[in-house]
Image (cartoon, rainbow, N blue to C red; front, side, top):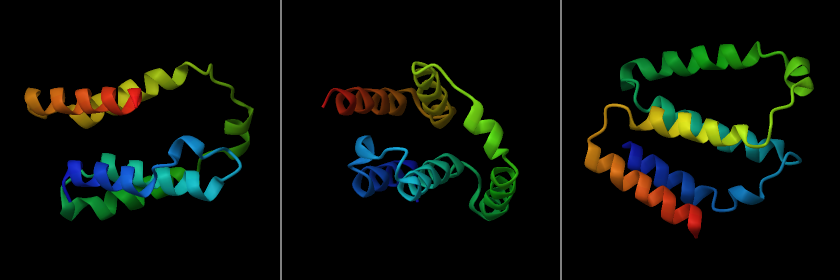
Length: 110
């Protein structure tokens, strides 16, 4: 599946993502899993399953108590969006990157 198709699928499946709150852990987990799939789509298909299992292992050893004690400034999320966007765009054609950024801007303003 192409990055564009996967991104469209995410938007179709989770149009209410802005409404998903901390009280809906299952929905947040499903959404983050799809973001991970979107990001991992750059890995060759024959190596992706192994990468997913590697990621699952790393997720399982995360210290839940340590994470629950951490507080990030609300605006740290801006940096996270920039990092995710840049990671998804590395190696893409400049015209494609321009289209993606313009689409992000128009969807953020909607």
